[in-house]
Image 1 (cartoon, rainbow, N blue to C red):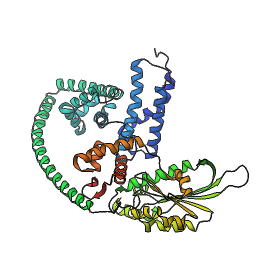
Image 2 (cartoon, rainbow, N blue to C red; image 1 turned 90 degrees about the vertical axis):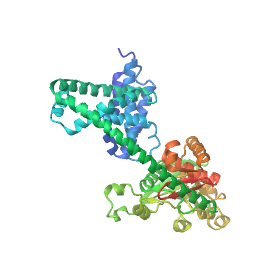
Image 3 (cartoon, helix red, strand yellow; image 1 turned 180 degrees about the horizontal axis):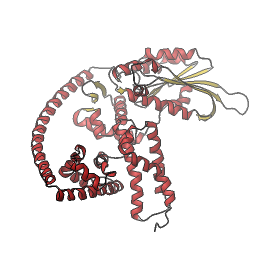
Image 4 (cartoon, one colour; image 1 turned 60 degrees about the horizontal axis):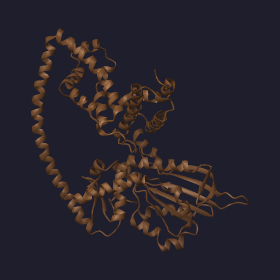
Length: 498
């Protein structure tokens, strides 16, 4: 019956899928790290299934299993999107796929309701149920059928949604058919719904006309504002300026977790860098800011506030004979925590005065050689790059302290080109990038710039890709092409062709 398929094997692989499907849209309230873990587990299990680990199954059964994997990943992708969480794979499923799932999920009361339960609630004129039935008769059925037949939605998802919807629809239709026979008033209710819908439609058309006129007006004002900035930008010579970045507090926390998490993974017991092996000793993690001092913050807000974490480790070169060189490695995440808490955002690169303290502190550390890595979610001002890469820094500072600056949004790493230690150890500090994906987004952004002369972050996300990658493309194009990035209060982040 199952050809060569091992059902018990598949049941183990789809076990986490069933739990996610059972929770449905409430998965958005689950802990972020837990959802990441589930995503990775299901992706791995799905790959194992597709690679034939459990054998082969008849077509219908195979489609059933594939639909469970796909829909559970869709539910997780939806949760990342709803929570505005920076997760690179949350674009794997389209808006149409997620919206179709949400529409059917809005009828999940029928999951636990029998035909008689529905009849009782209708007779009692249950407000929630009557709203669902009205929506069903006027628009939902048509929209769902269109989604199920839409070839842009992948087949396993359509398979799952159709199966789920057919079950709900059967209960509704059976209950309603009996109610129409038993209760004359229900037929009148349905007729009244249709009349009211026609009246609402007329009002909506009128309102839509007014909204279009208002949007045209707002768009005109927006373009005027950008024209002002464009003129302003043409007169600016500095490479980076105040207001050229845009990082929200939750994004800053994500960058901190990502930076420290990657370092923990890299600083295993033994690492290889520039052809030499090093033993890693005394790895310690600290918080530069005590978040508990902000007593007005809720627990949720504290969890989403960066702590300026930093790590210190000792790297000892491995030698067959004798003792190798010892290097002290210190990596710091630095954000303006006060600014982020007060405003919710930060728009300025770090200045030289803000990092000088850490450089001076590094000189007081014990050890023959120090590698200092400073990571910033808002990047670094032009003065910082000029100082670190300049001849004076090379002459005065490289004797003991090597400095590596990491722009967490653009992925850029700034080091003095004459600093051999920094060149050797930069891989410890830098963040991995999807270069092919970034190249595609940059190409897309460039195309939009040719059309209008500017691109807003919002427009870039709609057309070119996810928020993190669009922002990275903005900053890369600013450096490579001489374009300008500016944060405007009423508009958001804008890239302008100078």
